[in-house]
Length: 296
Image (tube, rainbow, N blue to C red):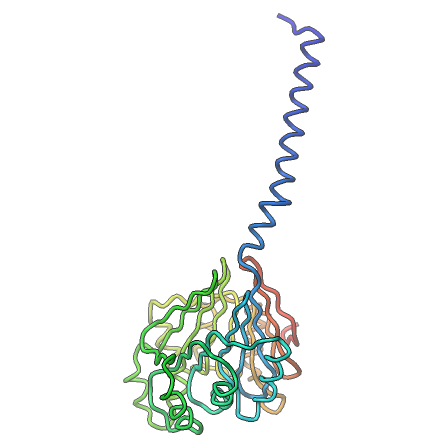
């Protein structure tokens, strides 16, 4: 039975109406739900400060501010100025990866000048400069955690997993210099993205991590020990599989060329603090890094 002309026109109108309704639904999804999904996490901003051959990173997310390592004592004006210019009055968390002076040098000054909600420290005794001063200061506080098992901090969708060495007795057998290998690791997670802070870990700790079941896959890494190259660095970086890396160091003590070559070979975009701060923005879906790149 043939369809009449009127019936054909009605069918065509219904089809066009349905197509238009579908298109409108898609546009509304993109404009409203899609935008809501993109903005669900807010933006995490990580600033690796230009503090020479030392480490200090400020993390800002929504109304929260944190700091991982505090550079040398001489770096305090840089850190203090950045925090003040960023209108930071309260620090939610301070993580000191290990007790070398280029990581804890400004810690006591920050404790004295800022309201710090939580302080996380590695659980070992050090002979390094500034260690005893820091211990004398924190023993009066109640907000200090000496991390000997993984601790997680949750802040409005942002998660920080603070990970100690799994074999401290073995690592501290080297009485000459075990501080670097006792560094706390910190995996920062927002949405599907992960940022990995590695302190100053060296070959023995790297080997232990590679032999473990620890999941260290991340999109971004703060490379260990100011850009020093280690024998198992290639295997380590392949396990992390980052797209971006950051080296915190100085012009006087630049990263090892062998490491920079490896980063280029692995197609990892590397940035360093030799000339200025490195700023990383993460919205839970994507990461953008601004600064001086050494692998362009």
